[in-house]
Length: 283
Image: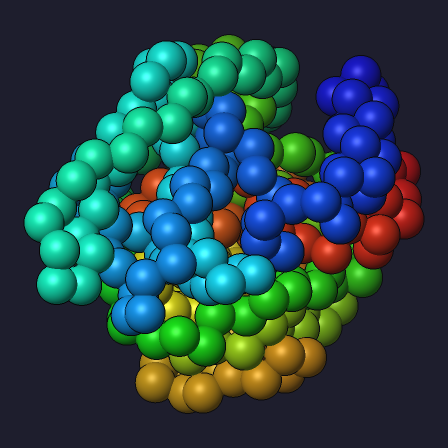
């Protein structure tokens, strides 16, 4: 499919420029659905920064503090403002430019109840929404942010981030993560250290695990056949979270992987190990 070829070109470009970026966690890609890295200076103590009223992740690289800002898929292209609070100094504002990014469409056929839920499912869906909203708004202060994220499952690339999705011909929200197709029962490994902030059996997402990596960086793993961890559990990179399945709204067994930064869903490919991603099969 065309979008896979485009992603291969993107990955090749990221591999070439990776050694020149300011911070190795995500790539600096200040477009819709991407991540902006904004230099904050060389203060003795870490400053705080806020984007659209929400705290953002702060890290230190090469002696400089950097704000790592998640940009929503529906962000308006143009200049955006970051409010900075340096320790012991007055607040000030920094600006960065967000560019437009086009995402392709995807048309899928699923069970009718997964497009137009029955009345008895509405309360469950509302509760799922409250859980996700609370989890993604979590901001845990820490300086120990993982510097590299591994591929969590041995599978193939089946859907990229940002697809404009149509289920049974009806438009729905854009794809908020990437899909890695694999047989049911394939182990899902934690891509980095974190803490299980919540788990659950959600209507659309099926069996789901959320990991908190600190400072608003949250990852979500969906459609699992089983969950092997529990809320509050500390996780090391490589720990088994559960297994691939086909629970929730799916067309086949796969892992849906979401990355959220300052309560904004962003492209996981900006965080995952680029060489490993480039080697993932597409079919």
